[in-house]
View 1 (cartoon, helix red, strand yellow):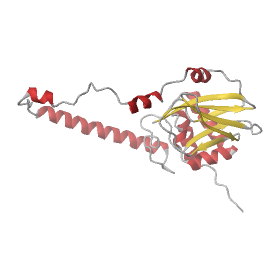
View 2 (view 1 turned 90 degrees about the horizontal axis):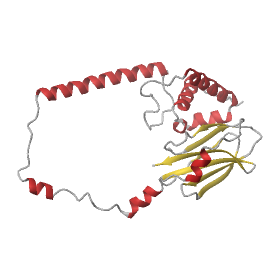
View 3 (view 1 turned 45 degrees about the horizontal axis):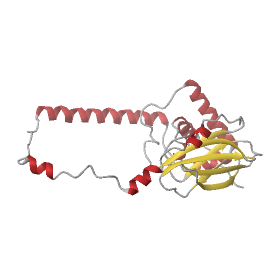
View 4 (view 1 turned 135 degrees about the vertical axis):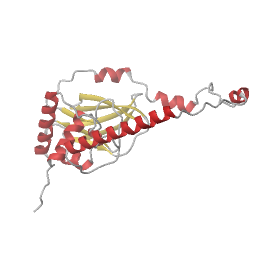
Length: 239
């Protein structure tokens, strides 16, 4: 007999914090995949998220999980980690203040160059024109007017709730696309560059899709369609 382990209270709280901080794409894949397949856990996460959003409360200070790119499968209670973060902040401020005031008591003498003309002559040439590579790379981040207009469109899809990725945020791979939609609907996920060149088109289910292969740096747009009609549009950046 196979026993299914649901998300515990800490993992549900972590998912709700991720929704509040627009950091769902940084959650461990085990949590994302389980919530995508388990309607019970998904409802628990959404219920907690709606309560927090209704109270307009956000986690205070540095979050113990999302302040680092390191993947942590489990962590202690949120209260204890937030207290530890505050203690670390206070200690850091105290040490910094001590160093600053100590430096003021013992200021270092100002050293002047022996030959100012020679020093200026050795400075690098900062007026050089940017390379073609940097210009091409910068062009990959220019917004598309057509896609920006599509994102601002009010789609009529009350049965669809998009959970990830957060719109306009930096992407971390594997990149999770998650939504809560009608289980009878079939969706098509499209990803395009800022030049509106399609790089991915895939048929997906009513829960989501995980893109494991990293994309080249640039600005990307994604569209979710059903029956040939767009029901959501968003964007993300790859650095």
